[in-house]
Length: 175
Image 1 (cartoon, one colour):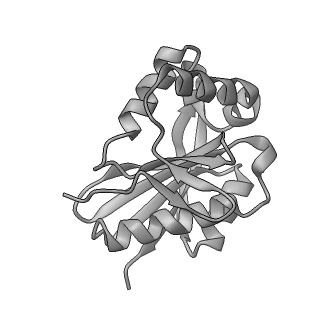
Image 2 (spheres, one colour; image 1 turned 90 degrees about the vertical axis):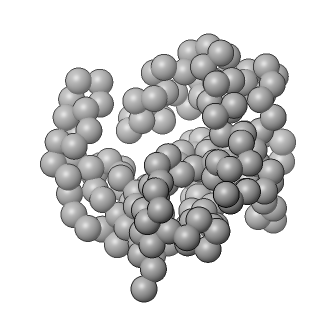
Image 3 (cartoon, rainbow, N blue to C red; image 1 turned 30 degrees about the vertical axis):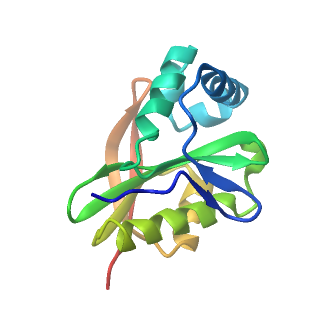
């Protein structure tokens, strides 16, 4: 079983496994509330995060030593999350989000590179994939900067608030 560190210093930000406390749940909910419209354009999960109980459950799920999931912290502020949302012996899928005011700083590019490295090196994966809304140009740009290849469009693959959306599949494989 792989054990992941509690925090990873990335110099100007940290990848952190937040302690599952009521205070951290309130802090996370505050970030989601402040970015609800921005994140909600592509991410339906924000609709369900309206109470500290929901955010606390998310923190608890991410806290285990054997879980490769991290909150992105700038100074002492929660500004995003990156995690493996699915994996088996061969393949893993990463999901990520970043608060609006922190885009364009290279934070997510470096975070994605770090988790990709951990997936290949520590988890022994042969393929890592990302499924990104076809209209989410900034997120796709992060994938491309990290060396992921767009494999194609999955037509009407995801339903967001009742509307079918096209998604792009990106992958990176061990050569």
